[in-house]
Image 1 (cartoon, rainbow, N blue to C red):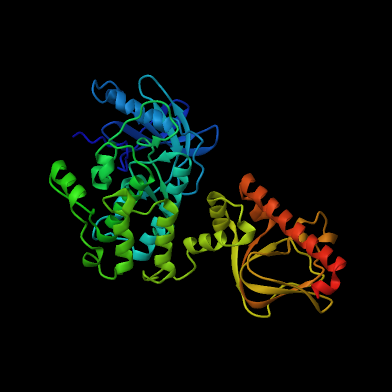
Image 2 (cartoon, rainbow, N blue to C red):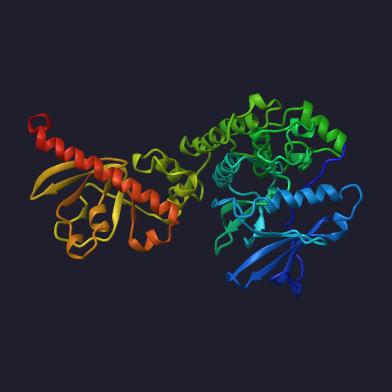
Length: 452
């Protein structure tokens, strides 16, 4: 059986010159059997981009040429469609008759394939955290009606900080994507065999559980330094994928808790019905490994992005926010912890920030009289933040922490860094808060005894 691989590339090569369409070439990033990838500059938008150009020789192949053309068409159909912090954006696609190309967000660095070697393995807690982000991103992709079908380490870009430590990831290469809403004929039996679910190898029309299997195989490889199954031939490898369970991770790497093994093995179940039914359940299973201390915290002693994301999801203020907007809040907000007795605001002070209480509680005092007790999911300071003039931005109350609190705060400058969609959701949340408070004030005036 011929198993078609998509156009995944992560080989660093020498520079190049010239241009591809309107995109000025800076250097060649990599090449494969069917395409080349270049780092280019988009002069119109003032940004670097990655341009993946299909080789004309690949398209002219009598057998596989039509398949490669469909790979390009699948990716081209996603221009401007995927807007998620952990998914590479596709900016443009040009169906050049000789060498069509796709223009994507440029992410400097390497891929997770670099960390699949036994001598380059990432810390266990970081692997689980990055896998949570991948699961949330692929869940977003699935909600757009798409199944990636080629989830593998080489198709997950690793973002590093100045010290070279991996801090984030982005899913890339949608050449093999199955668009559930497309009416045109689509290619089946695509992907990379080592990470393909049994039903995918059979050519069945997959659902999200095939990608969940692929992510489980990636997780296995990152933890152990080897894929779940390996064999010298495709036939032997397929036999293992169909019939043999993967070796327990606890026997391949020290410190792997049986709970970690259970999550990975469920994702790798042979039958789709035995896997996690959806991405959200898989993501929450990964997150629970951290919250339940089933993986060592190691160097990640602070609050993790996954913990902040799940905390936001639980708060009433953010009940209308989607995953993409919640990730914006995770990355843009100022997260602070305050001890008992700390004054968030003092009467008469001018305020420009607001706080959303994530944990703990605060009391509001007017002229030394307590007028409100606010807990998790409520906001304080929004009136001064929203006020149109300095005079109205002066706080009329004292707001004091009565139970050690974690807050999420924003300044006007930080709010401007959010997307318009996210700012709009904040506006709607503020309106809901103000309506509830006006209703409570009305009840207090109309039924003072009931309130007391």
